Length: 194
Image 1 (tube, rainbow, N blue to C red):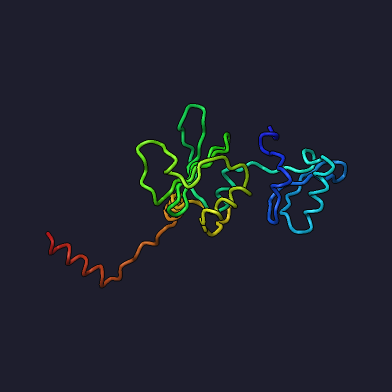
Image 2 (cartoon, rainbow, N blue to C red):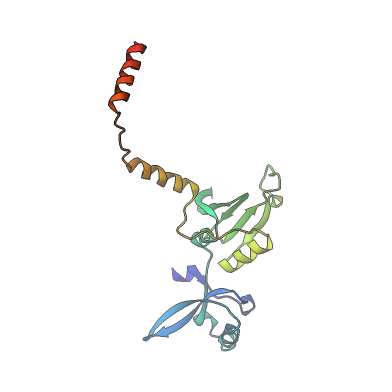
């Protein structure tokens, strides 16, 4: 199952800021360390590829729902377009995006284009494979989709509304005790209404 979560990148994929995992050994056990490439890593990466060890030493996690949400998109609801194909719908501001974790297909609808009656390419800013968070971030930059990163623990607006509602249901509101003067006025008002 772990093979389906990672792939081995090409040497040409690497750049400063590239997010990947590198194998290391600690106490005889293999560990995978998350690395974000800086200038000093380039030579080490080149050596790994020169020795032909990339499939044992380097891997990149496939793009996931959690990574997309950590970049600031909300939603992630499961849609069933076709039998056996699972696609999730995400939102950010005016942008609407579908992502399929099985096929790795990412579709970003063009918010400035009127929708065709049928599914056509003119509806999309992007409609192709997106394997990892690296491609996703590059794509957002190319499409000039700028957003503030939201902490992974953040919730959608609907989730926040629900949590606030539940919170306020638990709060006991103290009952107001009327003064003797207010009680007398209240009694008079009730008698006048009858």
